[in-house]
Length: 265
Image (cartoon, rainbow, N blue to C red; front, side):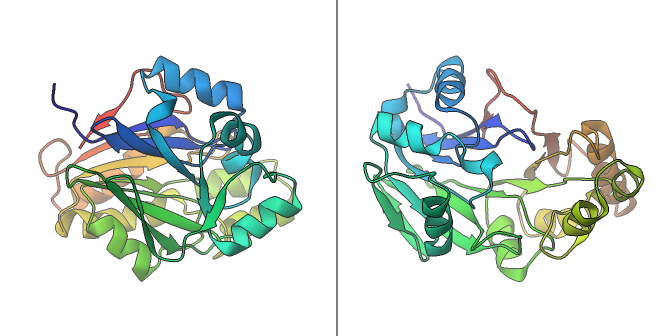
């Protein structure tokens, strides 16, 4: 049996985020943004053996990315990697405990036969980042969400990956007219907030031209966006540049919860 590289988006959005990336019976988790029980159930429903997870990588300390970490990592004896700032912030919030094994990732580290590379992101967190995973069969996948603006470093990571999840968080008009407090709206719209649909759409053509033809839109806001609106904004922008969905690229939206939906890349 051939074990192909795959990404399984377990959860995505404001209620929690978690992605499994792996191949050949080994993998890693990017974020643990739901309870331990929910993460374990999602892994089971997607036929992923917890013993195959070599490590957990946390992007930043916001609760929708690490609320289940303390229990999940301790119970399953899984090592935690994050930036120094993120580890400090999580410790202050009691999101990790002495029984958890933790290590700072500065640049790139090996996990079994895989490698994981870190790249900093502009977000209103202590030291947020995104990750690119190099699977044991030579494939690469990047998960890049929670950033107010796209940076050259993140562009490079995504453009040189075989597959990527890119943030398309909100529709600006919906956000401005919605019920969020003014200060929250300003935070989301800032350079340390979240990428809107239009900002995301503007980036996709560059990724495709550089060779990443497999893309998914993630961290869709439940209150200030819809999956259809996010997808149509990007598809229309690419269409204006002569790029056709299903021919020049594939683009999907990450569902809020995933059962049996994996992406082989």
